[in-house]
Image (cartoon, rainbow over all chains, first blue to last red):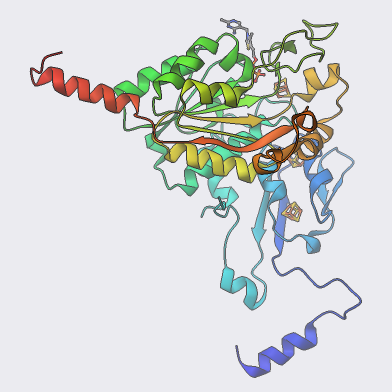
Length: 105
Length: 278
Ligand SMILES: Cc1ncc(C[n+]2csc(CCOP(=O)(O)OP(=O)(O)O)c2C)c(N)n1
Ligand code: SF4
Ligand code: SF4
Ligand code: SF4
């Protein structure tokens, strides 16, 4: 990273009053044809990304909050959620890792 | 490290068999996810993996997975798996059973398979009931809880699955829950890598039969209860027994080296073929 870029990043950082933007971010897709509307993802997503929609399926209402933690991906019993890591800034490019990481034992 | 999309394409029979048959929110699908991620993480060739099940809601898992699969008869999954392992010792074999399948009708097979210490990875999805047939009590239904066959409450003591496998001689024994799915996945990986009988108890729930009868709420409520009522083995060791009542203790209970059955059996074959005396 060059010095210029660095200062730009500092300028773009959110003011201290707002919550800092999560470093890992996810793009969340729900497949309604597989989802059965059990509500697990809506209830347990730590960032409250989903709301239950009128059809009984979760709707992604706050994607910007998603930290790609994969809770919903790992707990959806119907394989109806995909969360893709958003390539966003230097941090992500370095880790550059996809969903489904190795589990620590 | 595969993405969820890749996992779906690689391991699920996604074109023909989905959406799956399980009730909305049932934990069996969560265990299935942990299994495919474990296999993928370990880098196994899926054509070297076989999944065997018996009958029950849990028993339907092989229908959805693109391994070699056998959906066998109620209670006999471990027997079919033992036969397959002896014929094809190079395969990684995963056996998926419900608590009724593994411990009621299959209880005899369970203790003897553990005793032989044959190289299988057995996963018992413990939902404390016979889910598929409508909520009859099973050998793991806690005492005093209701079941369609125990309208006044179950008077039998429940089987502690992990302790049973341990005293029978299993090489690896662990318990986790569908809430703690990453931990569960780790145990499945360790079980798969273990030479010998590995028993993993995956505590789940059946909200539509047992849960409804006992007023335990929705899948979300029962999932939350797994989080709140479970404790690690390390923490449990520090508590007096009365405080552990009703708690799910998670952790690895056994990880030991025990002579493995197919290897011992192969040695017998070699001795017999070389004209050695019995
Ligand atoms: C020999 C035989 N006996 C009884 C049945 C009926 N039956 C089907 S599934 C089942 C029990 C299912 O309970 P469990 O094994 O705990 O699995 P779950 O459905 O809860 O996942 C029974 C008794 C059968 N299919 N075959
Ligand atoms: S966890 Fe899966 S099946 Fe349940 S509501 Fe969310 S997307 Fe649908
Ligand atoms: S990945 Fe985590 S933060 Fe993102 S939607 Fe799923 S549960 Fe919520
Ligand atoms: S009956 Fe129970 S165990 Fe069977 S799919 Fe429904 S919730 Fe799951």
